[in-house]
Length: 321
Ligand SMILES: [Zn+2]
Figure (cartoon, rainbow, N blue to C red):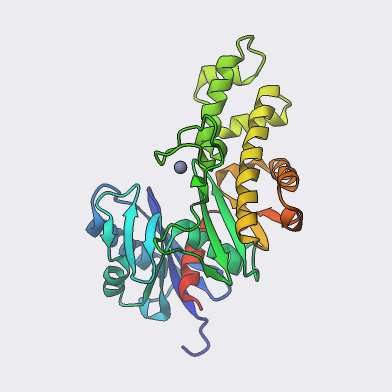
């Protein structure tokens, strides 16, 4: 390879877009491209789109496939990395027990490794982002739902069935638990995910019959979004503050459970909800300090650093040893 830096393809398969990036050993992105995900067209169409995105990213970097040490792929589903099989993907039709590693390696002609997308994002943050150099960390992705990834001894913890790190579906409520998107009840995601927050906002508005909260005005013009609740909480709206406090408390309960189980050196939060800024993080941290056993109560909790690139960079990190 001469003086050329070692590089890898990072492929992040999402429900709407396939992002491809060429990543060097320092975690820098030297080329990128994306293609629409043919979500309802089956596996073969997705493979074609992945290949097209990969080649476009290589072209953007001025490089060829043979310059890559390999390609890492982040998949939004249950993955068994050892066998290279994708067991299921929630938002893509026809993805059931697909030998993606083998299929993609023969198409691209380079080695391929797989990971769940949130696990890949956690690895990306541990290797090149907010957790750089830290061997034991947990990432929670706070979006519509809640995902997660666990890194122990610098490696992804995948579990026997590929389900480790599904932090959003840990149960945090037993008494009158809320339904979760997974079909079960009382999951963290139902309390601290954006969708759960919006649902609770609508319920709270129904109770606020004297219409004290400014959230009523928002709800009249359009559907409420999580950012509306955060913005009004910053303005001092009592109902929005209560909703955000409840969200922070639920999230803290989930984080404390993770701390007590794994005692990581760092907890990172990423995803759309982190746009809420430092005040929300401060609330989460103070609830964690109240709820956690003393030795882990001071574990740092920070926002992640790589944003929407974490999955692709982390996927590349799978092959950039
Ligand atoms: Zn659930």
